[in-house]
Length: 372
Image (tube, rainbow, N blue to C red; front, side, top):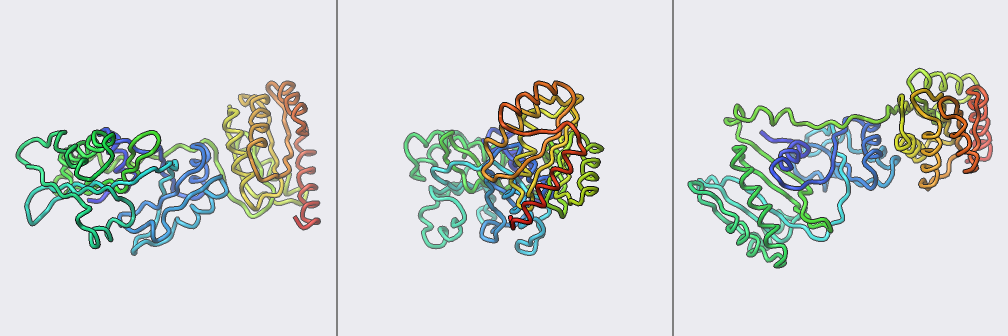
């Protein structure tokens, strides 16, 4: 049985092999929300049980929420070697200094495990095996006795890694072999194993477990890790982004936009008790969403505090590159402090939802009249 990379990596991490932070998403809006909560840049990776996804366009990078939404839309639903992409792994982007290759599998001819390792990893490893097979180290552990750490270090030395990396690379090889045995695997592979400023990390993970042994490993199929969204985001057909703290308030704000002749571009509910970070995240999403010409932020503070909203707005506007007019309705808990913070930052606000909605539509119409 083959496991998705997202599942394999959770197993690798459990066995002491470092991985990057990553979370699964099933649709574009969730991918954008997860990426925004993680922070940018990120890698958006198709989750399929076949190889070659990089060359097929199943791995893309995103530097902001808008890009995350765009590439998630591009990857989800595509076919890679006949397999449809139904979900994604959103992962932090690593600063890669070097790439290695390590795999443990079963050599059917020799009837024993084999470890293959190379100083050169990545998408070209198959070509390397054909053109320069001497660069791939092959080692047969004795399956009847323990595979010892010094043997793993010797493999690393033969790979030709720098002297200071022999022990760390050897440790990864040893842990991968222990994992291979523990889970009755047919294949346990890291390609690439990357060297970053923070150390060695499994940038990819492949795990194939013998079907006849699955009765001993039922927990493996339940290891898909879904990241709970911090905000609820829905794409619509208009050009005014609508954000509110609560589904009812957000829908009411959308109705007000429609009533004044505008059309919402988003439904984005930040929920009750939204923090400064969530406000910042929500604004970062819509400010980087291309169809949006104006943002309407509608907050009636209860559990949500107006001063936290103001701080989140100020932070988001400081960090975003794409300049989009924002209309804010801000009242409720700590409203005086929140309004003071907005005034000091030079950000206008309204206390009436009706006035704010009308203003948002007027701004949008003016921009369209100017051809923007």
